[in-house]
Length: 260
Image (cartoon, rainbow, N blue to C red):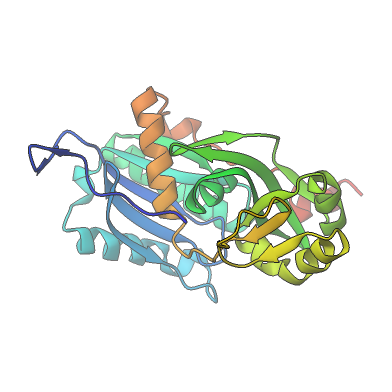
């Protein structure tokens, strides 16, 4: 499970040289916004999954900044989930992040939504991050999460449930994470049973070697986006707003139809 740590301390005082980060995630249904000072999340809000991100994103940014007691002009850089995920949601979130960064003359961190989902689920040798891709399909990617570093073990793919199982069936110990894992829970349960693998929806007390664990649902993926953005900042990998681009993994439905 992902826990946000306490702020970095020096002689009992928070280090003031840690960057102030505004993190935006609109790739999932609800989306979320967070403000962090270094590794400490000061405030965060989840969106409304029943409404468009265009309806509440700016309002949630205003609210989270107010909750954190900071001004937009104080933000050192903007972190945004770049996909995969909702095509419309990504466009709204990235356009907003880029506009704010241009106005504030700040740089940006582009964070894989699947990486953020895996990171938020906590330490694991094999975490498969899953996001709904429409028509019952998923976006999927496997990561190893160790010492608060996410290492990709394969490429992000757009898969049917059967293709997803075929891709990861050889692994007997897996943590499944994200909205896609929740949506595919019964399918995963059936597949685990057919392979004589135990499936748990919470961390078990035993060290069973044939075990699939489905992570709990987290509604503020932006917390992880902020943390991973901080890692990019430390590595000197921030980009200019115009270079922040979405990774859709697959063409949109409109693009697919235009080619048929």
